Length: 347
Image (cartoon, rainbow, N blue to C red; front, side, top):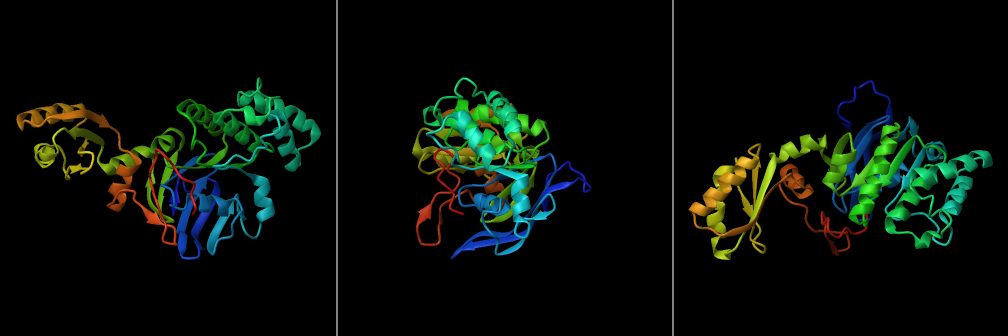
């Protein structure tokens, strides 16, 4: 059973999932998912579209009933004790739950009343949240005039009314520009520092790296890897060297030239002529050696760079294949792991 690393077996468990299964017709969204999240920690659930991340969140937040298996929040079963669980949690999903015609302040006041927050407490909490999420100046403007990042921050602020013990963030930065994404990261870091238990689903390895104490990688409804971001990257084999071969006819020669830089095998994309080499801990020395080897073989290249592993690299290392297209159970294809244009997750 997956659990946040660095936490002792005796750590109080905020989220406990054991062998969850959930299907939608022929689509098996969850296939025995199990994990544990110690109280006060941040667990990142990493996976491409269709991996089952959103389905898992919907089960844990009582929006879906599992076909089998057990899920508990602070010891309360999400099926049998659903009402209690709802009082303990908050959810900020991929789509915001704010009313665009209302102002930011009005949205928070409405959500507070829905969560049965007392009038006196609401009078204190609303200004406090507006300040914390940098929305004071925009508080009395309709939310439809907000940027995407501001709307996401307002949605997250609304979810915190009532001080939930466990916060679920389902791909909270999808669709945000870089500035909005960084702002959301700061908000999440602040919540984590205050001791809120957070379950964060994301497609971005760098996001999980920045925010999570531990990461669970899932594919097709199952845990396929777990650990800290560094541990997952180490499974890939350290740093990755990439470059593009100018002459398509020289790609095979380039692969042979850099083969000595890796314990595995270098790979190349036939369409882009982009060569990828896992160079382990060689780091900058691999750059020097690659330039010498390619120059010696008289191979022209461009865009030589050394980078940390990506989500696709992790998937390749732990599954033997890159994130790829899958069908939705009706014969329609959808892309998985395309981080430049993420699609809504159906399962």
